[in-house]
Length: 200
Image (cartoon, rainbow, N blue to C red; front, side, top):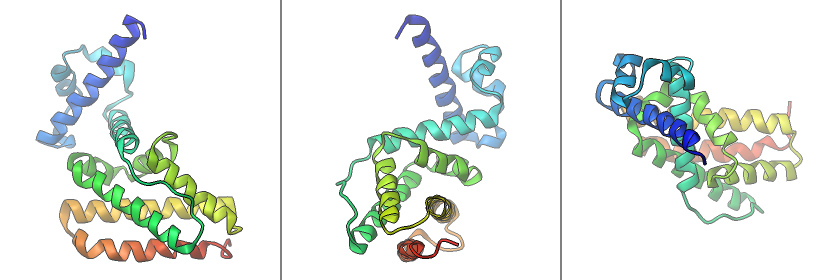
């Protein structure tokens, strides 16, 4: 990487980290672009080289943090050959999403308002273990004869449900705590096997 590209990357990272630190202290709604550039030590014009506005920064921040987490996590990967394997994979998926949200409460607050960005990170992150897990679940449903469009829609809906429900439980403990929610999530998502043969 050349010096200029390195400096651009450093400024981008500095803006993301500065924003995240400010969001942790004050909440995203109370942080302005002026606050972010001041903390990052860059000119305001530099901000607009990387982001359209604060909401674009939040989107990129969620994608950055989620992608780093998904690349770093480790678990035993295996092919899904049976309903039992499937349940194990689903449990792993839920466990890692919960871990991610619990360890990143500030990010969970941002994701709570932008769940679609978190889903995009899960689906589009091509190298992380969670993406491999997503792909393995997808392939399992293809083997069962499910329609590709139906699989994509159902997986999107289930990820949305898990992330939204867990954000509420972690951040507000409402309407249920995470301890109450987790076993039910696993049961409900385990019923994904019904996707085969129900494609309408």
